[in-house]
Length: 240
Image 1 (cartoon, rainbow, N blue to C red):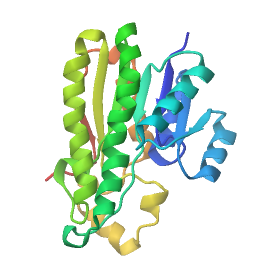
Image 2 (cartoon, rainbow, N blue to C red):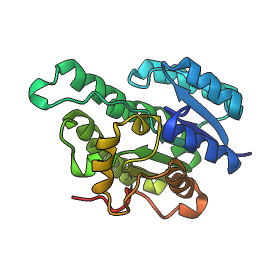
Image 3 (cartoon, rainbow, N blue to C red):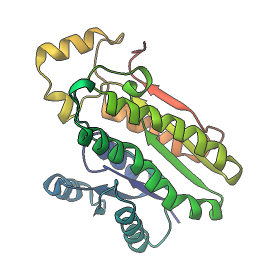
Image 4 (cartoon, rainbow, N blue to C red):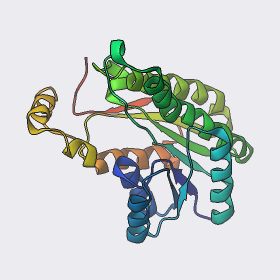
């Protein structure tokens, strides 16, 4: 039986690219989304990948979503890609508590929610692959993103801890920290701002979605069974 993979935030951008690549590689893929129904329906029409809507920041919503995925796919989740995330940028001295909490819940609490729900069956099967999407800004920080950077740094610590807990059960847990990747979001950045960003990237360009998806594809493969607890930085050489 082909392994079942679930990608949160899996119908657009990097998540959509990962879901497509996993399906092409022969996995049985399900994609989660929350609010953008039109984008999700378009993704499903193009890929035939089943789509499921729930709020990853809410534990009970996640529990129902995972139950629905497992029922439709007729099996438990073997591979979890925690990709869902948002930004609510602003300087800390102007940031509203609601902007802090929303980003924390959506980006970091969601990783707890999803991992908590799939880790038990993975331990029973003695197999699992969990990939948590961090960010270059979780590694080096970013002005105006104290909330976002905190969540992405938290994901790295969470990943290392869960990797240690799970290694003896045949489960690997890794993080991927993309730099600036060409997506609909980054394509909307003003040209002068884009130029400044690119000037700070040693490779002189934004990354490609497929460059992230290919890395994820390696980490979920059985040949990567000795790789766990790492943070794979894919950022064109962009460091502190």
